[in-house]
Image (cartoon, rainbow, N blue to C red; front, side, top):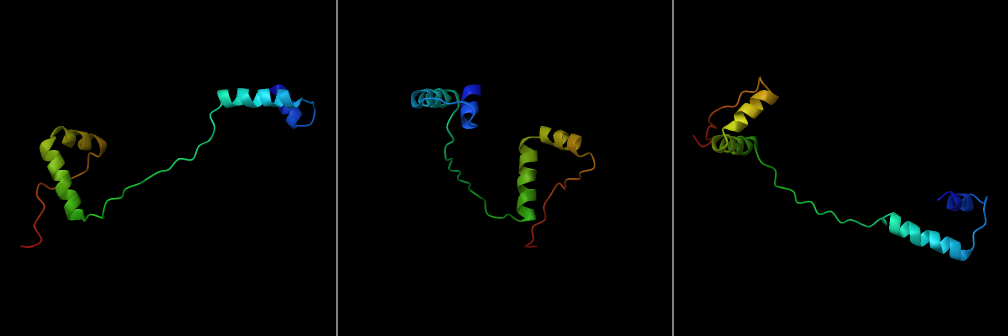
Length: 87
């Protein structure tokens, strides 16, 4: 690597076959950069009421989550029921 760096800086002459040998070695040692396609699916925006209802469902089906939430945020108050806006 030092010889290749010295060649790049103009301090050392390398033959074409030496340069090619370094290229092959680098390809094996270092992965080539590849394009990565990222697909992100977004959910529709949910209302606070919908989020609270989902949270309550999670807490009802996993009671141990309440103690985890209490540990993370002791002052957090979670209402037991979400009022129906149609009343």
